[in-house]
Amino acid sequence: MTNSALRFFMTGLMLSMLAACSTTPYQPSQPPVDDRSSEPTLPQPPETPAYPPVEDVTPEQPRSAQPAPSPQVQTPIKQSPAVVALLDKAEQARVSGDLRSAQNNLQRAQRIAPRDPKVYYSLAQTHMSLEDYDLAEQVALKGVSLSSGNNVLLKRFWQLLTEIRLRAGDVSGAEVAKLRAQKY
Image (cartoon, rainbow, N blue to C red):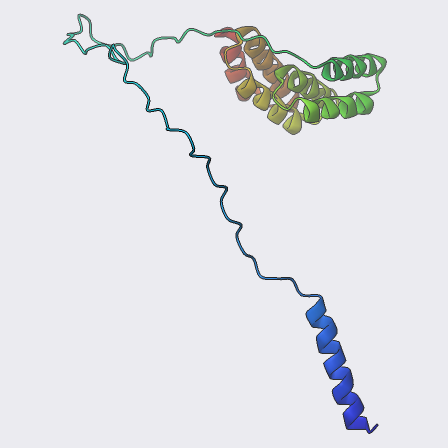
């Protein structure tokens, strides 16, 4: 075989190997077919109107600039046993002075229950003890956003934020947090 024939053969072999590695083009699957063997039932209109009729009401007093306080309903948060165990381990580690272990346990609890404000409270406390005030404040603010409706937790978070900001040297921010804590 000559050199040019060998080169032609090798090029063809390489192209066929490359083509073998390619994927087929995307073809969307057919949507599932509904079983329409029975007659569909149409929703019946309600016998009474869904909304009461609007009455013409004239306000007796002008509205104040302050919005009316909305009733806060405290919703209990159900914690999984794993989260409770991790919170307990973190507290024991924090009491014994092992803040990094406490932080690791709390971060694990956070991955298990990312909407549990109690995890965020403990984690913010731990970050504050580690003198990571920026992260402690961020975690505490996330906890505030998850605690809406629970005035006890909101007060505790704002008190914690007051302490975090004082330790960080943010006196004016601490005053704002203190005022927010007094609202609850």
